Length: 198
Image 1 (cartoon, rainbow, N blue to C red):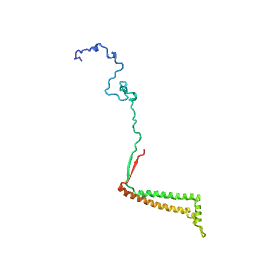
Image 2: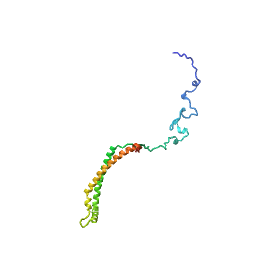
Image 3: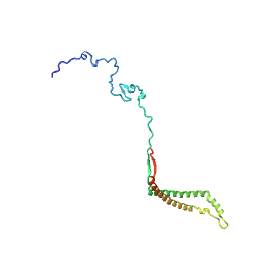
Image 4: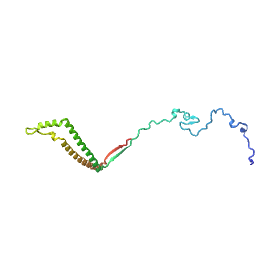
């Protein structure tokens, strides 16, 4: 191939001066050259070997990002307002029946324990002797309190009261459920505020 461009002009600087690797650095440039950046560095970074905070006139303690002191640390409790608009009479009757049976059993047991404690303390004998002397006469000894308030008779009497209590409590609770449903249809029912426990 032949060069058809002809003779090319020679540059004086390259022809007479030193090569780029042989040149001495300029007197005002002491360190390596860093080209200017189009955008500033982020906080905490460096620009041109100098920390960003130092270029902006901010100290290192102020250049670091400070945590937010007003942040809310306590969890928020969620609340909900609910309304009891209807009570099922069948469920109310079952619950009241079971609760009244438990209450009746507790009544019978409490009566038996109370009778034993009073008998051990001698209450029946003391009170019974006083009543028999007050009501006694020449023909009879008077009213016998110990025979009237014997343990089997007390338990029978308490059991009858417990059965009546079971029937009445169940009937009244079921009737109360019907009355509540009627009143809730007019006023809307009972409002409840529920909060979530965390």
